[in-house]
Image (cartoon, rainbow over all chains, first blue to last red):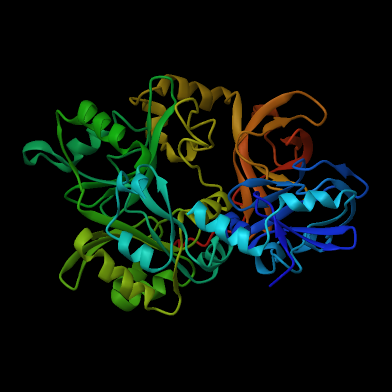
Length: 125
Length: 375
């Protein structure tokens, strides 16, 4: 069972100390279809929770990427510039989008664990 | 899924679901937007092998002259509605044209085939109701207009498409681009034209609805063939520089503005006799105020329909009417209308993307080399 937590916008986070790695879920990449371009936020930018952090362009449409937690962006996945298909191929691994330094780990309480996210998905059907 | 219950289905609906298609509503039909392979793979497959498309939602129409009168009477009547030369369309030949309105705008674009004893026409799904009404009102006095409700329509497109079809019907290999003929296969009458909407070689095949699934299964059994949905159909036609009705052409665009003057043969340019002819003739002589052009944005982000087109750092001078990701080009491609003086290939422009300007260049279309089989 992974330590991933999920937002209602189908983003996942994994904590390492006070750094959260953020990506989109398997469900999200499957719904989007082939990703052709990712607009990543600037390093150093401060995000509030649910603020628009970037854009994921699939063949058919653009989708916003939201910040599941507030914090400062310390790293973005530059490999997505040349290989946006990683978002589809490996959404939980090489398809990660950004790393965010979180001040307030209390925010994690608002996110779903794996089991809760699977239930959430089941209810969407 | 109660919403689906209101949608029409094509004879291939069960097959699409069996193949794992993602179905979406389109022009009142449940249609496959993609299969499990995904849009990018399906697009590339159609450019390298043979992609199979269900386009049965489109309208197929058979037109003859009433009372056994010569087909030329029907062709002459049809010229009341379209700018192309129908009277000199030879048996077996196909032509692209439009229904125009009094302002010279476009009501729909369509293909017309002369089949010797009748005219065979394919119109867009979203407009077919209006198109039939237009035909009835415009030429119903002279012509029998039969909507071929029970027929399916599929397209097999790509460099391997004709070789595959020729395994079933060897003579198909003799068709040249925009040529059509009928054959009987397993007791079923097929009308096959060497034409399509992808910029590749290939055919469009009208098959009786009850025989469509078996025919398509047979094609899918060939190694080179894979199913392709509407998502890839759109990106393929965009790379080919082909218009999508309701987006790149509509009632406010003339064929001249749209770069379709080539589809109005010389005799008709001179004689007129179709709706909006005076306006179209004037635009041919004086030039149109705006033109449809190809656009290549810099960078990797697609710029889509509705985006404003500006002179760099300046005023909006046009709008993107189609835009997306070209899987063969490997980057974003778009088309739109710009002021006539800014339409030359190489012109530097700027496209609005989420409030920022993206540099773009006017480029000649198609974005990829065509694969048509011209003799």
